[in-house]
Image (cartoon, rainbow, N blue to C red; front, side):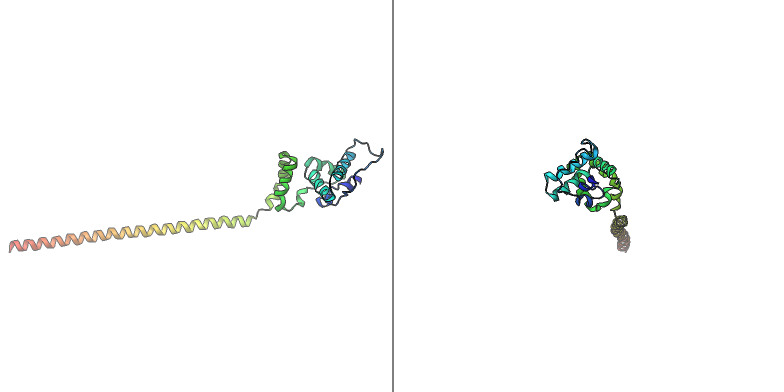
Length: 189
């Protein structure tokens, strides 16, 4: 109960509301000074001594809630066992991960990411992702349709040009036949 008083690990909110004014707790032989509980009490009161109350609460959260081994030990001692990441709004997780990396290193960051990966996936709006992908492909279809129409116009104009050339050739051939006939008539005449 005394450990829970100076650092309640049951939730982040409980840690923030723990007692941050107790600076020394001497139990005079009740607890062995090297017992795990006494050591955790000493850590919490040391944080209280070195900071204002608000800063002490924040520091306790960082040092105990956001450090996997410390949190596991405190949970075992206080009989609590739940994931701290379930309490955190997924939109705040990047900031929390940055705090973990800055204060505890990349090993702790990896542990935090591993234990919260499903929570991260729950923030993805699958329906919206599918809609965006569909819209992307629909835009590509429209783009390809427009390009196909442009190519059809080019092909049609090329075919018209070929037909026009054939008509001109027919006309030229027909005209030259007439001229030859006319010329032969003059010469025969």
